[in-house]
Length: 156
Image (tube, rainbow, N blue to C red):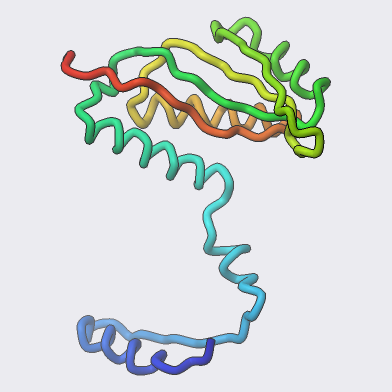
């Protein structure tokens, strides 16, 4: 994209905030390197954004987020060995563990794990859990595919 519109946009902002000196510049970046390397959220920040959106959706349904309920986490690994090592590392943490495998032989992350445990889904609780799991999954080259839970309605 060219710089058309850049100066009028800057002037519009300057008029709204006359006590500030605004300085702007443009740089050709056809591969969007600045965006992807500095502005785009990291994988963990994206996970936190997804967690916030998920909890906001549950709250909009009237969910009592602080009430414990079964929470299922979906995880995928590229090898059965990595999956096995990860499962061993969390075996004592109270999760019900279910293994699965995608039937597509060319899938990069064929070897799945579902972890289920009673937990709260308020943002602080679930985000801490999901980020911790994601970091531990990354140690084994896996991918965290998110969590799900049935809403708990009407209790306080």
